[in-house]
Length: 384
Picture 1 (spheres, rainbow, N blue to C red):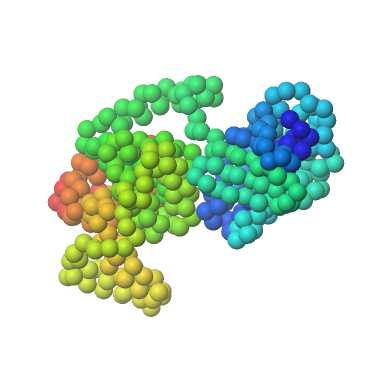
Picture 2: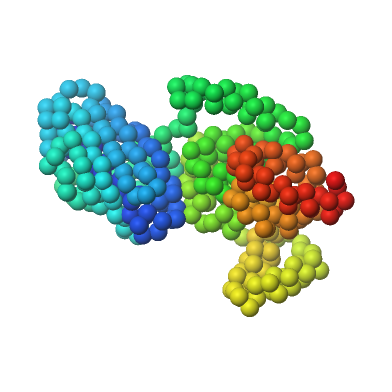
């Protein structure tokens, strides 16, 4: 690996950090920030020579972003190398803070510490691109013709769990595996519930596995796409941006094209005008004098468009809404949406199993907060 290629790793790694940190300061809850949090492993380190040939470095590396806007990066050549301005013996390590220009797709890495001390205090500017599960970094200097590709570190596997928490691996193989086989809720519905919970909580580490499992369990690509669209309004735009990036990679690997996804617009399902008039009247009384804009969008965008999109059956749309509300601790909205789900065909036994599934994927406290609300709904509907 050349000195330039070696330098590339440190610079590019630093560059990556820039993105996450800046997002943290500029927009703490933006999709770019949330999608970067966690660990990335080095997938490719490439440099284009004067004659156009691309040389790939034989290196391994790890990039980590933290929620509070810091990053660290390490890159090691698998062969011994002489020292360079960025590495000692083929090994690079640095950490610091970063600033992000989300519009220009550039970032600046502020090096606070490094193995090579001459890097400390430098401000390294780089361009970035996020594509599916990959983060690609390039130099902003036209003279430097290199790029670094990072891939999302996969979710912990059985061997990883055994090395960290043997009991957790036992629970994964036992109670968690048994959960998916329980009667009362189909595997497809359990996948819808779990996907909704992950999106609501923006837990991206398990999304690739669970999105893929959902498709295996019978959730159609169009339905998964529509779940992501729907939850933009019930979990927040930034959360679904993270989910969309991961789903894009899953769809690409499975050869799922635009022809299998729901159209952006089209014919809607028929609306129950009487029921909608009652709902709209209640919302107007509760919120009209406080936030008329919210009332307008709730009426026109959500209940006269989003809820009528045919790519997701009304029962399933309510199912993922209830799941997202419980997973995010928003129990105040559960009464209306659980009633709506049961009016659309969700049974008491199924609703009970939804809570059981969510205990594992959203935590016992969130489920126990929702249980009194569900109990009241069941009793009011005469289903004790």
